[in-house]
Length: 179
Image 1 (tube, rainbow, N blue to C red):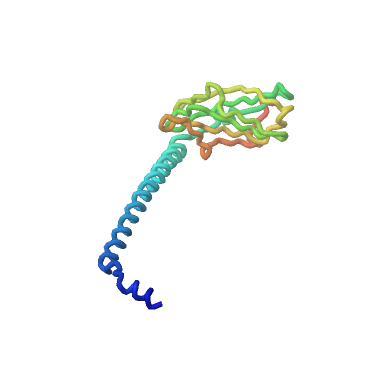
Image 2 (cartoon, helix red, strand yellow; image 1 turned 135 degrees about the vertical axis):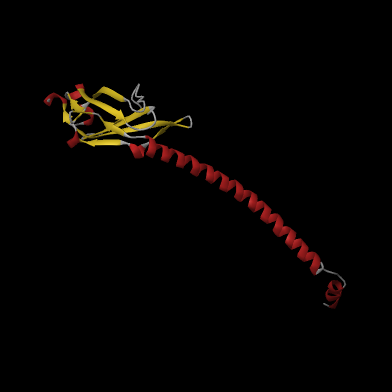
């Protein structure tokens, strides 16, 4: 045993000053790596938040979709029967931006009809859109609600504004043939 004690007694360790300098250098290098990673992470999150904010703000402030009225009568009605059913409507864009596309969801007693983009559904700001579209009562059942989802061009991307959707329940719809 005395030989091992003698062996270590002759060895010199790292001086406390050099050990402290090495620890500080390691801590600074590690801090620099973490700061660079953190900067990239924060920049990515900031870009995502800016994009989301721009979309939500644009949808909230620039979209105002209404059913047209003539003499106090909403211009939205349903008619027909079976597979020869239809939905007729006129919508006004009272917002500040053009609505590039318009999606529609019709909830029926038997199922949900969805069309992500009605053909030629551009509605300029201050303009209107008239449509008479077919609706199959046999497949989807009587109408419970109709929801229109406007889509804007935001930074070159067609973006749905679900929060600004216009929904009308069955009680708000009239039968076209009852007029």
